[in-house]
Amino acid sequence: MRICIVASDLEKSNQRLQPWRYLVETACMLAQNGHEIQLLSDGLSRLLKNDFIEGLPVIRLASLQDWPLYPNQQVVKTITNNMPDLVIWHLGLSSFFHLSTLKQIPYPVICIFTSPIYNLHELTQLGTNKLLLGVRFSAVHLLGLLIPDWYIRRTIDKGLINNLVVESRTNNSRLLRKGIPASLVHVIRPGIDISWFTQKQLPHQSVKIRQDIGFSKEDIVVVFFGPSTPLRGLPTLLKAIAKVHTKDPRVKLLILSRQSENEPLHDHFAIQKQMAQLDGHKWAHMATGFLSQEKLIQMISSSDIVALPFELVPSDVPLSVLEAMALGVPVITTRVVCLPEMVPEEAGICIQPSDLNALAEAIQSLAADPELRHKLGNAGRMNALSWSDRDKNNGYWDLLLSQAIG
Image 1 (cartoon, helix red, strand yellow):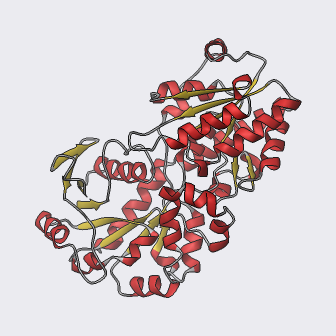
Image 2: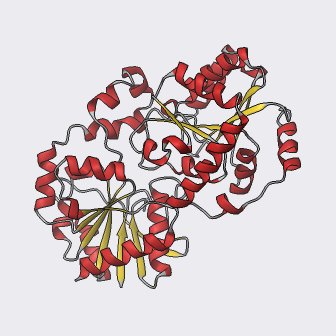
């Protein structure tokens, strides 16, 4: 089957970040199952017109953007020239404002919906200051609040979309509450690289890694990894560690800040300033720059606790949570959209977002109880395995493709 997958901003620099990681994973899986895959994206002004990602051909246009009454004829022409049997279209909540191009596509369309759906309370409780500081991530979700449920239902009723694929049951439930028929929405969970389950680390290797960054074997190391944007909860985590450290000096913080090329540096500098104000040099180490996946796994595996206290999830199902659980390290995260589904009670700890005291208490309880750390770490690993069932995902996609063509 010839399949055209349409997604904005798909390029090598972000293909390992959500939501593009999920799109690339899906494309590769379909290609391995014998389908002929053509990727269509934008970025022609910066990138080659004919590109490749993971060995799959990419056609680049200047833009995929359309307007409510004005389809993007270049997109329509490119798709029809390739004569696919089916089109897979990447969709976010704000995309419902501009789907006029889909009206011109003469092929069955399956949409992959990756935008977490927030309600007004969930966003406003963050406070105006945090929303403005994190406007690069919050703006699209604030825009999503402006789209009335009836408008989404009307778009679906027009029959432009054959099926919607989502990554979590949480998003599935929230779409159903907007009135989208249950028969239209299908949950196909993302997986993670098998290396997160199979890469082994010996105790003496962990001790060496700790020593290299200034921590001892007896320390309780809490690790945070990912970008340092405030809405990922790192400022709150710094305050929590400072609080816990006064009661238990063994508790230390390792920050693995993955700064992408196009990410502004002010978030990074703000974290450094906060660390200085809290005397973080006594209990924290911040590693910046690119880390290979192998090195990242080694450093997380050498820690005792992973803390990812998201205050806002920019894209559904942050893979960092699954990756941490796959390593068997106990995870502390927050009750934000899909995260309680990813980290059920017996497989980790979920607290309210921005709750400094609850975060400090969770860290302190795990630091004081090695048996609890072991129990939650093992349960989290089993939970991560259940999310990475490739055979089940293959079955779901085979069914969807046959239904759409049939």
